Length: 102
Ligand SMILES: Cc1cc2nc3c(=O)[nH]c(=O)nc-3n(C[C@H](O)[C@H](O)[C@H](O)COP(=O)(O)OP(=O)(O)OC[C@H]3O[C@@H](n4cnc5c(N)ncnc54)[C@H](O)[C@@H]3O)c2cc1C
Image (cartoon, rainbow, N blue to C red):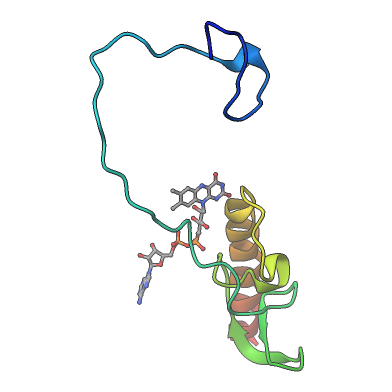
């Protein structure tokens, strides 16, 4: 396909074709993995865990990707997990500390 100048496998622009024609070549066995468990616990924007009716459960906070249900639901588009993990960690931690100090 490189020599012919046309990607007949995937139809991509020929400028992205790059010949791999010089060894040595190695084989690597790869396994599926997960990038995490998205969804699960629902929280409000204060980091409070909510019940099935959306009401906050007093004193129960969650943070990190396990609490991403309100952000991603059934679909995680990718690349936003570290942001949600970081800022919900900050928000939930701060609010949990305030609750504990009451
Ligand atoms: C290969 C890969 C690539 C990724 N690429 C991206 C990317 O490009 N962009 C992006 O935004 N996200 C990416 N992610 C997802 C992102 O890294 C995670 O969603 C994020 O790190 C989750 O952070 P977290 O703090 O919620 O959870 P974690 O980082 O999983 O932290 C949970 C912590 O809890 C600890 N723990 C578990 N059980 C217990 C227990 N019983 N007691 C005490 N401690 C416990 C664990 O040891 C761990 O340290 C990627 C993930 C993977 C695996």
